[in-house]
Image (cartoon, rainbow, N blue to C red; front, side, top):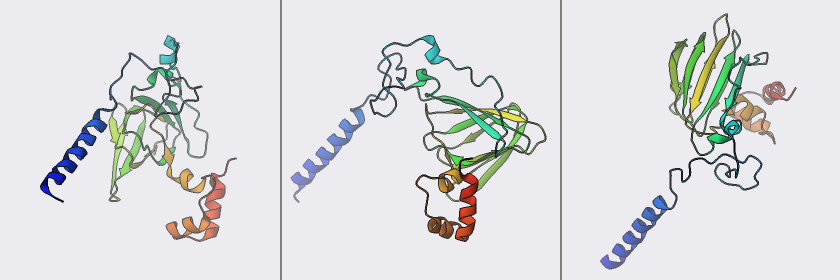
Length: 217
């Protein structure tokens, strides 16, 4: 390939990169885009409602503690775009997490967001694990904050004898949650027993026993 041909290739690639970077405006092009949760239009987010009210920007669901009488002793109450349509395209959301004494928010990830937690009441043992399998943990108390980097496996545990509660914020309108246990042992269709048996170095009977515990009650 001669010098001129190489130059043409470089210019074509550079032009493609420039146009791909400006083909979509990263900022809002209107004041709001309230989510139409009933729309059949498939896109990265939700289509905009034609008419909206102040109620589309309101949610009272975080004002009261959630019930924690479940297997893990914790409850996440989400305040995302599916609860607050006005969050559509704004890139933020909240959740409230309540913990019974001894309650656990089991290891999970948020594939689309970093999380920042603010302790409302009580104290928690929190931690995240990096891709080098290094664990970082901390005890956080009322009024303190901890950050969980995007996509990393993390958890929160109430080791105290009284209930605890935290408010968490995300830089996504719908951060998504993958609980490690449920993802692997309650998938539909199920992950094959032989895959989990080899991955966790346990027998298939153990795998089936764990799956039965994640089965819907």
